[in-house]
Length: 568
Image (cartoon, rainbow, N blue to C red; front, side, top):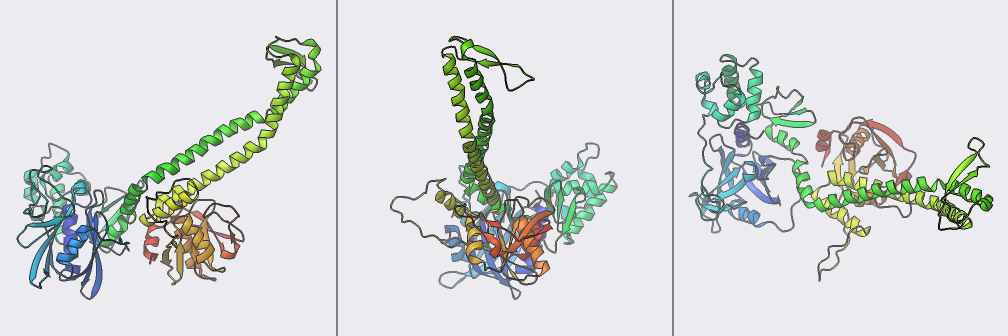
């Protein structure tokens, strides 16, 4: 895990320097596992994210905007009651474990000064946020742990808080080269695993980096490399970076030379985590909320793809209509040669000199005249069905394009977008409305568009689903605003609120359009742009579907960092 004890040490130091002594002005809980503290410290406003997410647990300062629920959860109300308005005295780490301890001084209902301690345990699926009083008794936790679930510690109101069981390991921040030599066996091999086994707070990522930096790891090179890295962490000489290799991202507070990928360095650990987790936790929440939608859309797409295959077979059969006509005419010309009960007719083919005879299959239960009529009937049916089948294929292809668009939208949707996509499918008669008994029909709401600001100060609006796309293009945008969309690729509608945007703003809007498209992981994506006046919605078209002309095309590479930087 990248967020190991060493990373926790670095984050504790960073938070102490930025928010220690600060006042908690507001507390929100936008999602089940995430809590946001708004803090006023050192003359600035800060947002602190505490996450006990099973896959994305972490603590860091954030600049991201989170939409809060209309009704705050119970744990959020409890935190507001006990520590909102309080001051963060200091932030500590429990040894080198992934546990951060916030000492908070606040006042109770009658105005008496109280001390509260908030423990944030960053331990994967066992992560938790626990509030205790001045004597260490648990006031409440985000997740409860009963005695039947864990015999070592209980996380329930009224119980004494107990740290998770300590591991008998050496602190790397106090270790020297002699300690390293004493605990590592160079004959045993697997040195990275030995480092993890003997030193607290060290992850496999850190250990592999140490072995790699040591080159030919031996009793001279490895102890020196390890102590250098330990001292770098102890002295807070960090190089926060994200390294991308083989399509996968790794983050750490030190440079990862063993990963051998493209590295990007950040100014702080918080900035690093804000970038690394941008969209990841959101995607996880969306996946949980939209599992049924994703499954439904994928199944509908598959049905239409299978339908096209069957229709194409029908079309191949229909296009053999002339053969049926030929059989009917040849049988009619040779009725005198045939009799009921014949299974095949070998007759002269007057239309093909190269194949003078042709064998025609017959139904022995029919007369020669009835067999000829059967082939004429097949010919007429096949001839009539060609146009119908072609139309059905066209409609199925339109459905596939529509579901491809929905798949792309679900891949980049936020939790607030899921409702609109579900609503769209209900309106399109694909899904039944989930209206409970006695519940009034909700009024149609105005879609909320994502807003960005170009480096030149121009407003850029983005539609994340078909409802938003349609609202943006047909209502929110003016006739002379500039509209963007990836060329022949499913994606979002993007609009610059300007009739004459500068070249830099055009490239930035095009990059946003490419990022919110099916080609977000590609390079050199073609993006068309034109005035809104040249964008039309055909009558009867599905939501979000438009045609356009008088367009120009630019080629851009999707850039998540640019999208984050420009977001309002």
